[in-house]
Length: 215
Image 1: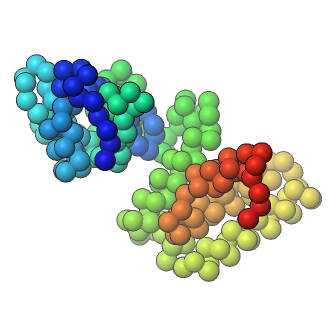
Image 2 (image 1 turned 45 degrees about the vertical axis):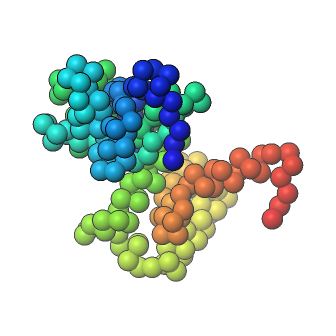
Image 3 (image 1 turned 180 degrees about the vertical axis):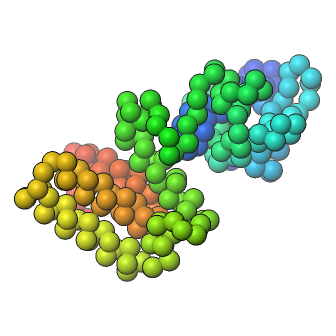
């Protein structure tokens, strides 16, 4: 249960809405206790309208709902960060965000990813998780999941071997290519085990601690 100090700001707190997959900030709204509770109960982001003096669920008229993923409170417990999956444009003007920015899906290029490509690994993990849940026909990722754990683990090993071959006898371009193949298949394997690439990043952070000891 998150802790929110509604009384500090007269019963309302600002709620920053962020796309859970692309990390793009979509809009800013306001919530009271009732709208927060309704958001948690329905899974659809609901605000309190200061002009109409009532609750409103984003998308109730346009169909562009915001599907709740997570809610966090800031250090002062008076601002919310809500991650959600948008059904369509978030702004009432028809743009992806209330700042006129584009919110590109995973398959499209993004300036944010170009500046910091590591962000794409989280997006790729989200994408692979979606494949795992939906299992669409004709998807290579779906075929890996259906082949089972042993095959997924084998693919990681095969790609790792190809990476070693390129490192010792190949080119830098092929080294990057095979390393990318290995990383993708590793994410698929982790997803099948209920894990994410961030879990490995957290382990590396722990190892960076001077007091870390090998298990």
